[in-house]
Image (cartoon, rainbow, N blue to C red):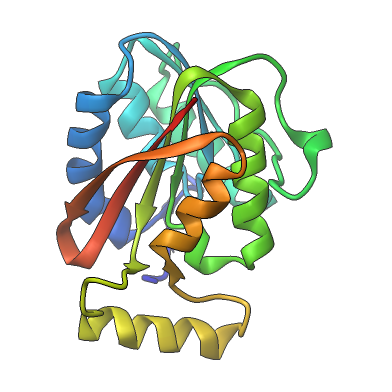
Length: 207
């Protein structure tokens, strides 16, 4: 978890985002539809939202975050980009269905949230995706996971320990447990993609 740095424009800049935006975008290009509504959960600084909306101009991209500071940063980045397909950030809390947008979505994207939140947030994310994604819609998860058949990388083990030291409810989740929570909401794990720095992208389809 690299600390975000404030820019003169009032936006937050994250070194981790600068490193992972390109690899994540390659996967999104390959798997997201050419057109449709995309909701980004826990959009953080907003750098991903601007980069992805700018590169995927056929998609209507809506970032969201429960943090007012994050939403202010998203707004600042969006103002500098002036992208017609990038919508204002929503004050969305996955634990509060009253904050969820209406209508159907073609994709939900969630980057680096599941391990930096209590397990209830993952359950809320799955409920949101299960209720809002259109049939065949895609849930994209990015981050580090535990996997029974793959030895945990030392860097991920140290990261897990640091997360739990900050909050015992945080920590790397077991991939199969996450997949089971998704399945309970009508979402099937269809692809596992290895990413740099011992991260994964997991793709789930609404059945």
